[in-house]
Length: 160
Image 1 (cartoon, rainbow, N blue to C red):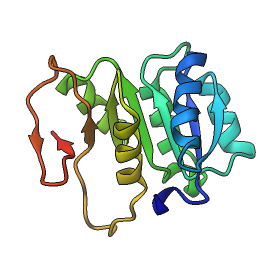
Image 2 (cartoon, rainbow, N blue to C red):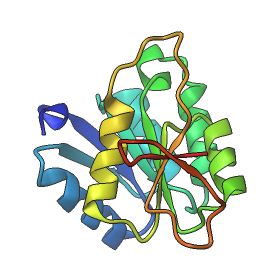
Image 3 (cartoon, rainbow, N blue to C red):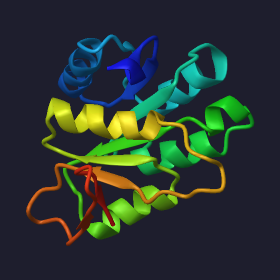
């Protein structure tokens, strides 16, 4: 997929297996993956050296969770960091959780367990440039059956 050509993504998750799985999915389409185990490690990387095109993060990490990390990224004094697309992954995908992620500035949401297709589709959507005046609803992919009702669009993306 052309959207992933020469892209760098920071994957943040306190679970090494989840980071490795995401790195494998993204690496298969040519994405260069940088990994962080904690939110604080991710912030340090973003402040100092990691020039990335997007961040994929887990919602439930310790000591800094994904919501706090997303808010910290959005509050960055570095414009390039504050504007990064952020995709959040979580096993809890209720409407309330997804709205909380959207309020924190998350660009897309992937419900766990996720498929490679869901990861790539959500990340591609987050990386797609859009006009500044056009707001898009947060995208959710692979929502489990316990998730709140959502509305589908013709391209198969799911929106609140």
